[in-house]
Structure formats: structure tokens, C-alpha cells
Amino acid sequence: MLPFKLVYHPNYDLNLGPHVFPSQKFRLIQLMLLREGIAGPEDFVLPEEASDVDLLRVHTPEWIGKLRSGTLTASEIMKLEVPYSPELARACWLAAGGSILAGQMALRDGFGCNLGGGFHHAYANHGEGFCAINDVAVAIRRLQADGAIRKAMVVDTKEEVEDVYAALLPSPKGELYNDSILTGKHPEKRFVDAIKGGLHQSMVQHPNLILMGQDIAEYGGAFKITEGFVDEFGKERGLKANFQNGTGLSVLYAVKNA
Image 1 (tube, one colour):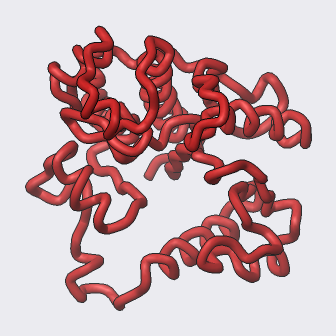
Image 2 (cartoon, helix red, strand yellow; image 1 turned 90 degrees about the horizontal axis):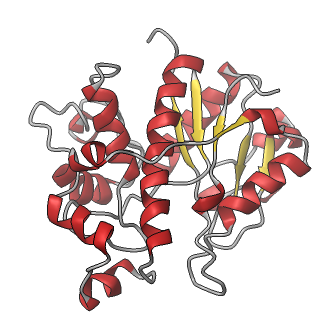
């Protein structure tokens, strides 16, 4: 039994068939975790759909209404890049509910993971790049509304943070994104090096932490983020997941009593 829970729902899989967005990856991740003995059935929890109140903290009523009723324009579907269906809408609501639940469990257990979600290209009033609902932003706003957190750090590219999240999560006081990292108040560091340093620190501090992703472990990882990790931590803590277009995990991590 894992010391934390994994959030998963079978309806994360849209059954799109041979589509460029392989939604079956969510199901395959769960199957691999069970097959490899990394997790047992008792380690998974089912999310509920996020409420419209939760989604409206981030998205416009017009966009939520279109997703509910299936009245997207041809242009909006083209930007979304996946065919609209009621199953798509339910999967979006479930993914947002899953990320909320993962955030709550992260605060409770020290770590939370939603095997779906991570749809960071969704804007307030439209979707883009396979992303209709920005579940990460929804989860942040729900946790803030509950008084569970005040600040949140989104690990993403500078362009995504400034483009998508700045509009979704306006924060004049810098509560979402602390730009002091980019102003010279700290030693300048490449984004990739910062990620590698953070991962290494977490691997040292948490001996039970396992990394799973595309082309990691002995392959060194994308941009060499995990290079040297196998020698230092062992193969059993770096698992390669052979899924097209990556694993697509939405992971939330929190330190208890922080």
C-alpha cells in the first residue's frame, strides 16, 4: 500500500481511437502501476466531477455553457483539436475534480497525484491544444476558496505562466507567480537545471519517491533532467513509461504543515 492516494477515473479515457491525443494513456498508466506492483487497487480513489461553481472561478459562464450544451463553434472545436462529445465534457469535469482532490490529498498526506488532468492550455473563454478546462487553475482557486492555501506555484514554462495563467489567475500581489526568480534577485539558472535540482532535492528528502515518465531512468530523460539519477538512486526509483506523447500526469506535491 502506498503512503498516499492516486486519483483516477475510467472515464478519463475518451476512446478517441487513433487520434494524435492518446487519451488511453490515463488508463494504461493505471494498468502499468497495477501490473508492476507499484500500486494496488486500494491505492486508487475515484474523483467526483468538479462543480460549475468551481469551474466558474476560472472560466467564463459562456464557455462553461457551451461545453455543457455542446454548442461550440467550428472554430472553437478546431482550436480544441479534439472532437466534442458529452463524454469529453464529463471527462473535463472529472479531471478538474480529480485535481482538486489531489490537491486536498497533497495537503493531507504530503503528496497527491491525479493520473489525468494537466490541461494547461485552456483559457478562460476557450480551449486549445486538447485542453477545454484548466484543471490546475481550478484546483488552485478551489483550495484558496477553502482557505487551505494562500499561494501556489505552477511549474510550467515562463511563456505559459505569463500567457495562460496570468489571465486565468490574476494576482496583483504575485501570489501565483513570484517573478523575483527572473529579476536577478537570485542566481540566474536555466529552467531545465532548476527542474533537475528540484527533482534531485525531492529524491534525497523522500526515499520512497518514484519518478515515472517518458524516456527517463537510464535514458537520461528529456533535456537530461534525470541524468545520473539511476547511478545515484537506482533503477527501481526511475521508471520509463512507454506511452505515446508522454504520460500526461497532473501531480500536486505539498509538505505537511508547511
